[in-house]
Image (cartoon, rainbow, N blue to C red; front, side, top):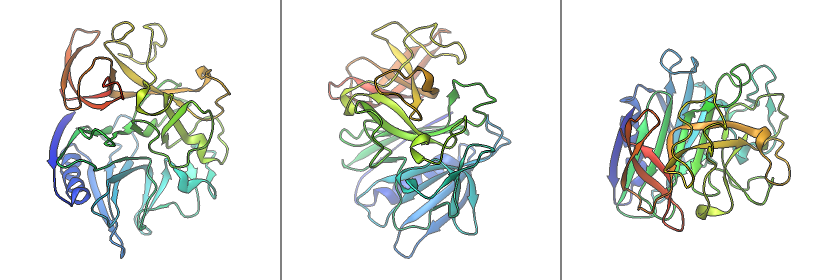
Length: 329
């Protein structure tokens, strides 16, 4: 892993941030593929995680994207194939632009449509994004060949983003390429999210939805929070015996010192709060932490093997108790 940080000020945040992300990603073994620009001034960079280096033994891609405006943030998208001729992402984690007009490939359970997701667009719906509402703003990144985690000290709408491989809670035969994109921090990552349950917060999507999904983009969406907004905690593993398929799921006792964050598939979620049939996965190297500190604070966490890891606070709720911390060492 590599931990990075950079401070930004002035009026060209998305331009400067994408340039910085390029350095962070390529120094972490991601391959720069190409840039895509438009006549309207929007711009995207495409990066590949090589199957020869990552843990899923399959190429996959991240795109960073900005519009022509210098006062907005940077959008991220995740996909498994890149159409270099038409500048389109294929087998992508869907957002609201996919509300209709796509089908699902029954072979690998990925999104399949005739056009793909065009990065050569004046605007692009986000699965996850980082905004720029304070000046100056410090951004933090924890990046390896399997995933990119980006957060900031933005106290109003910075958002912490996770893009890449997760630890699946399903058998590998069912979930062989576990890829997810998510924003932590309330109802982010999806605009006009489908109404599944009034107490769910939608925060991203996976590139695959196993076990015979139907042609609905909502089936690819995931849920990381219960409640409304930043005043609520992420889903966490609350017992050492709750799962034994993924290591390092649990640290401490309730109220926990720190715990890994899990997510659910929104497919077939029943009315109420019974989600046990929809457990999907656990994010790597991001924790939720229950002490009162501020964004940008560094916290030492001792895991089950007695190893001390350092983390930085990138997401807090309205009670100033941090929701999310990302690893620095």
